[in-house]
Image (tube, rainbow, N blue to C red; front, side, top):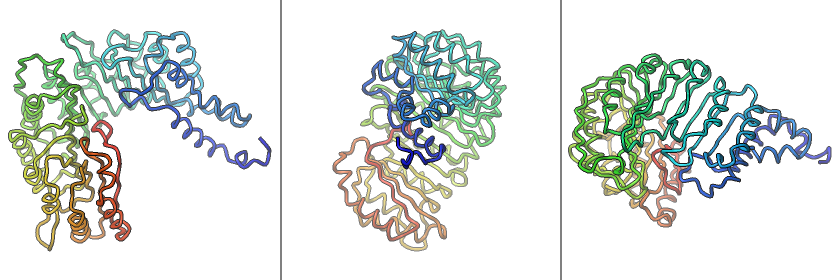
Length: 478
């Protein structure tokens, strides 16, 4: 490279940022499921940080930055498929970890299948040698049979820990709860299957956790235990139930009567209920579980509610009358009109009259996420539009996110936006985000005149912002 080359004059900090962007853009993230075009060679190249090695060959300056900057090696994603070349995997993993030096580690390991294949013992043991530098660690696999004893007392930096893949136990085999989390002074977020949440461990760390997610199969008693833990969480914490209701693990004549205790949790800030079903969901099972959880809780300081289904993109849950009444009861007991600021409902078909009944009491609501499959869109917009100084539904609403077919009359959408700008809080901003509904035609969505109208409104009104996405977004990614 000539000495006068412009890129040679860039400071190392700029080159470092360019390198980080280059690495991020080469390999698909392991969050995607299923992983497209997965191959052993691709995963070995990911582990070797192949793009960075190529950059290191350009010149001595780039070589020094690429191989001598620990933060470039502190992000590690692995897939269990590499265990087919175990010795090569171990060698690459060891080099990767050594080059990260003392940088905090971000690790995601995905098993070869969702509910089986934990990491090979040699791979886990090597990762565990560096546990004193773990900061974020996600195992998207089982850890069944893995010896985790070496982790106890060696997690001084750990902030975020997940084990997502242990719950599918068709024959209800016992699992060993994690006790190593009891000594993790920086831990703030956990996602584990409910049987792995050691009650004594939780008793030690409960006041430091502000984000707790548990995968629950309502065949067992762990839901009762989890509900009783809610009042013990720290102030402002979030709790997320992930209900595994796949038909393959539920008995054919399963009775979802759970006999849940009545619980008041004044410290809770966020409640999430999400049903995860690989096949078509049984609407009775899902509605019954949600209804019973709503009926058991009183949450007087809750600011966020997230309800959704994560499964087939073209299937949505229902919102039957009993579930609706249970949610209204939770809202009244907990004074949601005073405290609830965010309501997110994804892949759940709530009828328009039910949604309006819920929104009519949410005076403090600022952010609403809905799908419009179960509604007459024009009627909903009219109900949300205030034409004078009278009562306005959700008067403090500042953000509407809609998973939509965009079957709106454009002029009604315009009236809705203008009414929010006119009658909303003084000088407040208003934003609309639109993604296609899972069942919508992408071409019809893309060509809708609503886009043109809302973009024009955003140009004309500096307090209005419009965002549009052309792909549907799953509940798990929000």
